[in-house]
Length: 302
Image (cartoon, rainbow, N blue to C red; front, side):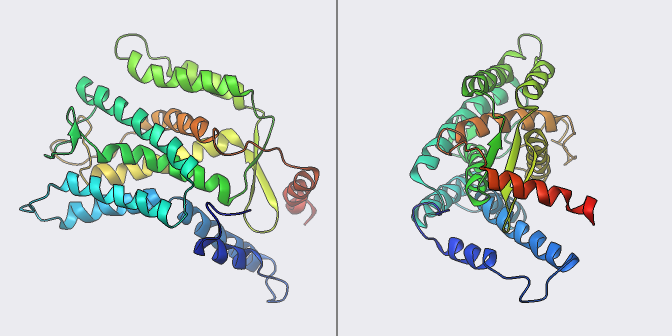
């Protein structure tokens, strides 16, 4: 699998790690599992590079950014996020096609931010110049980081799918989810119906991913839930860093309630459907399915 735009330094490191011969080094049993676990963490950390850097900037500027700086903190975050995005393209960590889709999600997120802040769902408490209708422009990059992660992890782990639903159903679901983020302020909240529709559409879908040598699999719905969980954890860090405030956080930080997990689950689905425009939705071949099945049965034979 070729990394975005040709061989990058990360691809070279990853290929060396994947070419490692555990038998020659005497790695078996729990040592081999530990190696795979560390490799998995390395790949995941690299996939969320954009979001990780942005989150680190939020924390660092919250703790150390001078109050009397001539450039507002939010404006600095906007320019820094733009610099990260340019760097991702310059160092071939994202393709231009992926960047276009991430830009769409950026715009989609910013439009929703403008509406949600107007409706009082949350506020951005600090002053800035680079903003639209009270929404600082760095907020769109937070949505873009979700799209960046999904696009990169799709490539790095060589995703394959079985029983992937018809594309038109995923687009219809994503459109309904996005509409509900607006309409529930004027009408009933249909999120439980959207959860049910998501389960109905994807309940048979398996995602196959290659960490070390062989592909493993999990239900795609479980994968969605895990991604939403980590976004929610990152949201707690971001609100602690005063990136934005929910009602009740104005006087002092409080943990974000678990009900936001559902919101991130649905929003992440929109990003997934957009990324599927540029990443191939491939089926696993017979060898991939056979190897994944044998790995899953290993504990039963042990």
